[in-house]
Length: 292
Image (cartoon, rainbow, N blue to C red; front, side):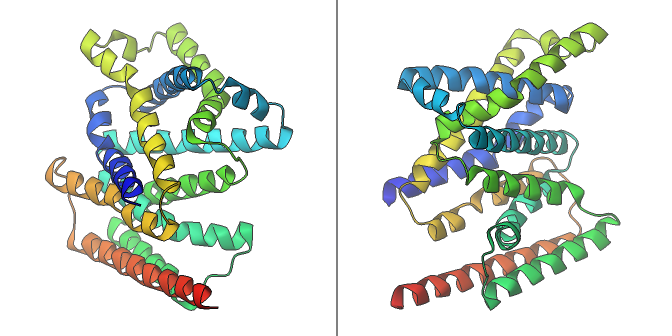
């Protein structure tokens, strides 16, 4: 349990401080950053899988049609999530990214109801209703629908849903997912070269080396998360996951100096209330199930 908790904390702290890393490439378009993230993640995971001697597991995945379809879906969804996240961070919307990852576990409940036919209890439905009210408050304050937050939560939630159909560890799964979108990333590189709009390749050598590390930056928290998930309960892991968006929110206010209105803070307060209600309802449901 202690080992799992340490791994979970490391994973979510790394995810929380990711905006600091992507801000290094503020002058590089989000699509180009994403293409490098995909390519270097594939390279790093390929090296890791080779060291682990897991190529037979990779080959086994690609012989199953259903697994391939799930991989294609998960690969595209996580690429969309990465693209929105990078664009939002580099365009001054870190507060909205934080909100998106606060909403993610609550949206997961709705996805479970629709696609997995799960039945939330009254407390969990109450949490979802409070979260919906929070989104409405934030929408009114913004004067527009918080599409960044909802898109991040939806893409990551659907990614998790697709992953449920793939029974593989993090390293083999991530290598396969990046392999699915690798042709698109390489094709985008070729396109940028043809039209003369390549930005990343003109970066100073130290900064380009930092961009090469995007594969490591992407893979490490996922690997720590996989180790944590194998060693601790899902309910405990759920509590720890709020470290990430909380760090993002703190960074957005105190480092990136984003404007946070009082109404927006009220919206976040409703989100936190919803999370507390959901956690209490889930723990009660777990205790009731154990007592039966």
